Image (cartoon, rainbow, N blue to C red; front, side):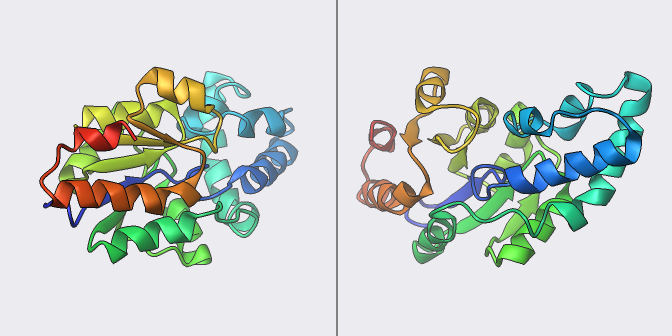
Length: 218
């Protein structure tokens, strides 16, 4: 697809939405239901990797799968309404569509629950793929021919580069700008409010036949 009509992938948690309050509430309810002590504040401070990874910090291996299933069942009631869109999220998606492009969300989150967030917030996306993490995200990015992938975690940088896409990182999640830059993000933004202007430059340079690498240096 031409650079002037880009396909842009976005992560969900801490990129498009602040899921910390919702996920915290879901973990607190999981703790109450199972009698297992869970430090929900600690859990939400390291969002990004798949649920199964976090669950194993709190439950023994033989209980982990059942606990993860219960968490997913509790999630719609406790996590969705409590999780707002992050600043600039709507405008970022609108900017891609205004450029004639497509928006895909690629997340490690259980896809039905990710869909509930998008529907609740009215975020307009063209495709959603869940349950993919780090290099695994490249599967969906390649399938949808994404040229850019936007995320908040070093795992998102790995996913973008594995797919041959430009990695745009936002410092709104557990990884700060320095860590994102040092891990190899091509572009580091403070948050998504900076994305539309960056996208405008990226699209203009691509449409003018410029080297897309120039966008990496901005």
